[in-house]
Length: 203
Image 1 (tube, rainbow, N blue to C red):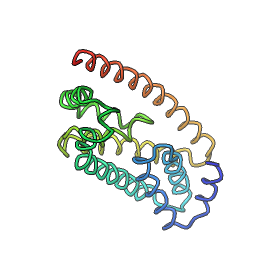
Image 2 (image 1 turned 45 degrees about the horizontal axis):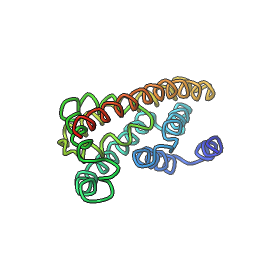
Image 3 (image 1 turned 60 degrees about the vertical axis):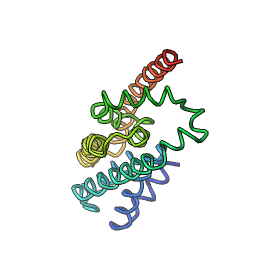
Image 4 (image 1 turned 120 degrees about the horizontal axis):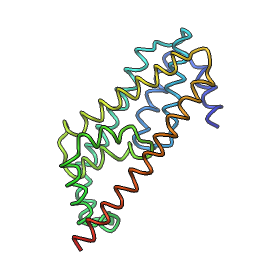
C-alpha cells in the first residue's frame, strides 16, 4: 500500500507534490502511522532529479511539522488540564502520575523533548503533554523545532544523496527507524516504570 502511494506521489506535478508532503509532515504529529518520513525522502529523491527543489522541500515540510506540533501543544495546554482533572482522562492518568510527569518535564523538559522527537511512536505525544503540564512555549516548541530540523535535514540529504537508487534510500530509512524504534521501546519502558514507582510512592 505504501509503495502504491509513493508511486502515485512520484507522478504529481511540483505544487501538488509540495502540498501533499507538507500535509503528511503535519499529520504525522496527529496520526503517527502516516509514512511522512519515507514520503519526504521520496520528495528529496525526486528533487535531485529536477522535479522539486530540495531546499524548498525541506523548509516547507519542516515548517508544516513544527506548525502542527505547535498547534497540538496549544490545544493540549488549553483543554488538556481540565480533561485529565475532571474527565475520564483522570482514570487513564491519575493526578499522582500527572504530577510525576510534570516533575519530569520541569527537570528534563528541553533535553527530553529534543531526544524524544527522534523516536517513532513517541514523538507525536511529546509536545501535547508538554502543553498539558504547562511547560512554556519556548521550552516545548524550541527543542521540538530543533530536533525536527535535524531529522528533516537527514531525510532530504538521504533522498538527494542516493538519488540514483531509491531502494538504497528506503533501506537506509528502514534501518534508521528500526534503531530509533528500539530506542523508543526502551525509553517508553523506562518512563512507564518511573511513573509507576512515583505513583506507588504517592499512593
